[in-house]
Image 1: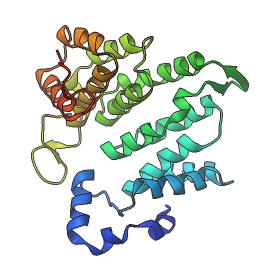
Image 2: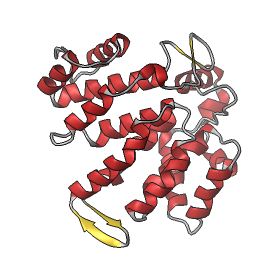
Image 3: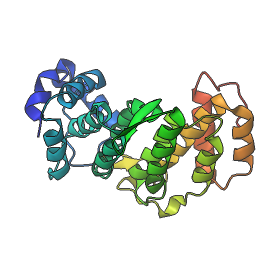
Image 4: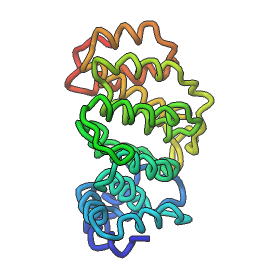
Length: 262
């Protein structure tokens, strides 16, 4: 797709230092068969902004949609393009499902969710008309996320989790987020990763990246709303392994290192 655009931005260290390259790929942990070129996030954001602002933006996005296979970095650039394109909110939400269906890695998911500042905008365009007020934007985005909260695919669920963690951990939305989290049936969520060590594996029960997404969301909620988060966790239906991951994430963060998780 856009390999020639990406090539000049490949990290020299990734190319020349086998140990660094191996470490980079190990952290990304792509599924077998996924090619990692070795770009850093700032470079991918630069490329995505340029493509999003070009006259070919919709054609490029359409090309990603129909491509049989994509590089790891192409998936990230695709999602970032959708974040950066200056288009009405309803049009953006029409374009995102094709991308979400192709997410197969935590880095693709989290990088794109982290750049989705449109989800926190105070104004937007819906059905051709300008809408003012963050509440209208949030409600539209929250309604959009429901299909992904209800998905049986690991990274579609994680997309809903990380978007909720990034833009909905607020007083008026917190209980909605907790309710969706509590309604998850983790054993029914399908993962392409196997439990174990090595390529295509995750060191925890499947779906590991959905379970870790839930833990990260809770640890972030603990930092913002400690009392309400503890109250929820004490009465939640979450599996014990998710709660253990939550405690671990809370202990790893300087914001919650000394905060009781329960």
